Structure formats: structure tokens, C-alpha cells
Image 1: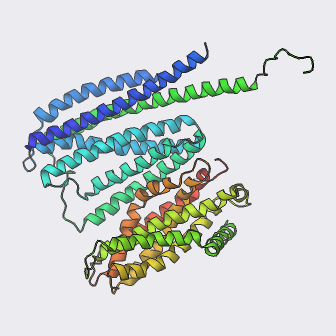
Image 2: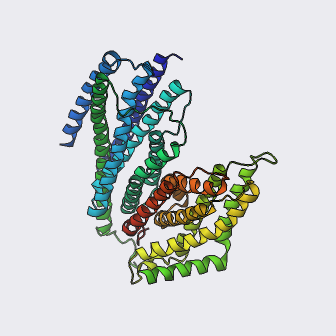
Length: 44
Length: 241
Length: 226
């Protein structure tokens, strides 16, 4: 692999890492929204 | 209030990162010895720096949690540990890629990388502890103690790794001094940009945990009220009752 | 506080040495580790002194986890933890007492590991064995202080014994590096001793930090909560 390829691999790892964490945050948010909907349904 | 701080931080992070991309790939010169791959340093350094700061933040929040018994400090510590874990993981990955190209090894017992790895394990232990179902107050105390003790250990880990390495040849050249002016400016700019990214992620996660805790309180209060209210009277079906 | 700590230490040692099962488990685990690692050697091969020292301390670390899980589980079995907490002494006396008991049990187990290392890993005692002995004393103190503080993680219904190893081992790294180096000085025929004092200093610093942390933080870990 050339030097540029290694540099791009590191760059890609960085953005994939942030992307995965953003996905985790989104999943937590979805769970929170489901709990709120459930609570609203129980209290109608 | 919190969401406006998050929005401003995220916006500043995005803008500064865009400027940093230009600085790293177009403006900063190529290093004579390590060549193009040296530019990984501009990501690796801020990730390592803010990973460590994250842990310090978690430690401070844990101390406040133990002293003031306020759950919000525990939640802030939890957010800091998670964000720190992300930054620590990326530090190790970028460090490994850099080492693999430059010296042909995926791993070397460089004291800074070793400290990052031990920090990663300590973070992982904290997160494993937090995932266990237990009463919130006990979880907060245990996680706070582990975070504080873990942070106190970090300087010792660094010193011991440096002393261990002193008998082995150094693989990574010292990056402390002797940086070209343009490289130094780029490095500082990247550290600043990653600060805003770190802060945004930390506050977003903190806000999520706060909302979840608020929902828990509301549901618990309702359940508690339901238990306190007397049961409705039912009509007797038989005279003998 | 010291009187209560000594009483708790005596109680735990009496329990462990009269029943014996707990100590046997910890001892066997360490011995097995040393023995299984020796399978990686060819006949007549000699493991490097540093690797042998590392195996000794790894066996000690695993032994430490079992010992402190066992010491804290003793009160959980009969729900006697509240009784200990109601002692007319600071709760840190529990930490100190269990640390002392753990240190004695660990030292007893290491008395078996040391000959095992010489026999299974083909080692010879060097001239500077006193450095290794100093390392063992300082290392055991650090392991006892940290093990006693974090051993309380396994307490209560929500406690998990498996957590102790994943939380404790990364924290032990600086101590392990120091004591492995000191132990290897005692096994090498001609060791390079220029950093010996710095390694001792590091190990002592670790012990000091965990002794202090134990005194301050133990009440938050060991209380009446489940």
C-alpha cells in the first residue's frame, strides 16, 4: 500500500468511528422515544 | 440552554474541521523522514489529547458526584467516559496504522500508546460496570470510585511504560519539539477543532442521559402514586361478604 | 481503627485457613497457570528470567482476584455485612483488615508459586534475590490495598465477581511492570541494575496512591446498599 493509501485508511477509520458513535447515539434516542410513546399510551 | 450550547459547539466543530482538512492536506508541508503518512499525526494527537481530557473530566465529575450526591454529575461522568472511549479507540487505531506503515509493526510499546491502551481498558471496565443492572445510587458510587482510581493510575502507567521502554529502542520519534511552524499551527488548529467535536458529542450524550433519567423519575413517581392511592371499592356480589 | 482491623484480619484468616477450600482454589489456579505455561517450552529449554517473573506475577494477580472475592463473599453468605458495618470503628477498618488478611493469604500462595517457577520454568536464583524479595513485599502490599478496595465491587445482590478482574488488571499494570522487573533482577545471572531504584520508587508510589485511595473511597464502595 502506498503512503497515501495508509493516510486515507487512517482518515477513513476516523470517520467510520464517528459514524458508528453517531449511530449508537441515534439508537439510544430511538429507545428513549419508544419509552416516551409507551408512557404516553399508558397515560391516555 | 443546553441544546443551544450543543448547536453552537457542533457548528464551530464542523467549520473548524473543514478548515483543518485544508490545513492538513494542502497547507502543512510533508515531513522529510516520514513523508505523507506523518499527516496522521494531525488526527492522532487531538484524539489522544481529548481522550485523556475526557477521562479527567469524568474523574472530576465523579468526585463531585461522591461529594454532592447529585445524579447529574454521575450522568456527566458516564457521558465523558463514553466519549473518551471513542476518542481512545480512534487514537489506538490511527496510531497502529501510522506505526504499521512507518515501522512495519501494528503495535509498539511506546509509552504514550501503552498509556492509551491501559486507559482504554479502564474505560471499558467502567462501561462494563455501568451496564450491570443495579440500583442507581450504588451504580453511581461504584462507577465514581473506579473512575477516580483509574485516573489516579494514569500517570503511573505512563511513567512505568516509559521506564520499561528505556531499555528498548524507541520506535516513534519524539514529536514534542522541533515542529515546523506550519506543522505546529496545523496541529494546534486540529486540537481546537477536535475540542468542539468532543464537546458536542459529550453534551449530546449527557442530554440524552438526562432525558432518560427524567423519564425514569416520572414513571417511578406515577408508580409510587398508584401504589399510595386506595384501591377502588368493588360492589359486593354476595350478602355473606 | 487498628484494633478493629486486626480483629477482622484474624477472623478472615481463621476462616480461610480452617476451612481451606478457598485458599486451595486460589493456590491451584496459580499453580496451573505456571504449569500450563511451561508446556510452551521445549524439553531442556529455559524461559527468560523476565518471562518467568511475569508468569509468577500473573499467577499472583489471578490468585489475588480469587482471594478478595472469597474474603468479601464470606459476609454475604450469612448477610453479616450489616454487622461489620455497625462496628464501633470507621468502615476503613474493614478495608484494612481484609487487605491485611489478603496480603497474608497471597504471600502464603506465593510461597508455593516460587518453587513452581524454579521447577517448571527452569529458573536459577541470582545474586540479587533480595531485590526480588523487596519487590514481592511491595507488590503484595499494593495488590492487597487495591484488591481490598475493589473487591467490594462483588458485594451485594448487584455485585459481580467477574467484574473484579476486568476492573483491577488494567489498574495493576504499573505495579506489575515494576515488580516483574524487580523479580527478574533476582533471576538473572548478571542483571542491569541502573533503574532498580526507580522501579522500587514506582511500586512504592503505586502502593501509596492505593493506600490513600482505599482510606478515602472505601466507604462509598462498602455500605449497607445492595
